[in-house]
Length: 370
Image (cartoon, rainbow, N blue to C red; front, side, top):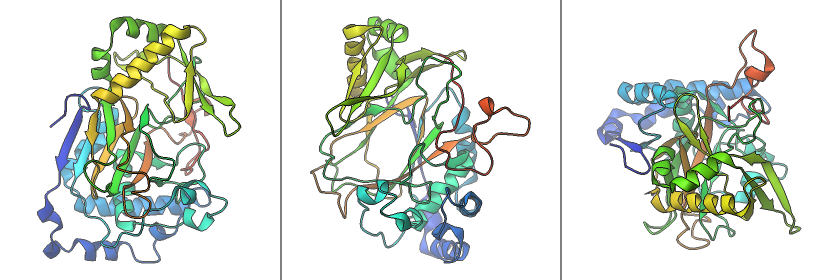
């Protein structure tokens, strides 16, 4: 069943499939002995070993996930209509979940290299990597060095998370040049390891782009198609740094779809080099409307949210209280998926992206027509 604004299809896994008499955890331990790649891989240092971890996870998921669900997931990245996100509830996860990691461990790779190569919640991460292989190829976030194993990012709270996370697309393809390099994965996956302290806590907000376009003022729609926005982030020095090139917030594509790009970031400001204040104000209105109309999802342990990055914008509500998630609150694991990662023989670099078996490029290339 799809919700109207988020346009989410919900799939509830049958808990009887993972009942104790079905032997799920025994099967998992047999599939992933301590010496297997899942427990010790790094996509940057040894992509071949990382691929072995992914393949092991895919084989295990293929054994336990219903074939009807696998078939649904396999077609999902390529569909331009219908639900733009799938929420699957009921995955069994680790019986002993460690404290939620801090963001210092996530993003400070040079200070914590061992954390980069470890698996914190192996059962949850096997689901994450296995499902990602159904959808395509899991890839590390562009320009990031802090993802564990080069593929898995921990989404937790720190003391700076005292506001909403504004609506955005992850690593959107921005810029006017149709041949410009982009770093835009087609799919992102969020998997719940631990929810916030209660239902009043942080929730993921998702808004389907086609439904958003039907709701906006048509004058704003014309303006945001014709003019561009530049995102700038505030540096510790107080100066602002442009992120990417100016982009059109709304692009009408050749296949009849329209892409909404919101590149909203914390501590950022926005200007329009060709539309001035009216475009900035229109961009603020569509961003706020996306947040206000978006579907709120409380991702709990064992919930997996799969998002088509080009068809949906997402964000997050405030945490229940600052500090509530430092050790025992909300924790999601996340990865990205691409079906156009590796160059095939005879393909040019401009159409290729990166060489097999690289899973963690600093930025894979591709094109999007504006």
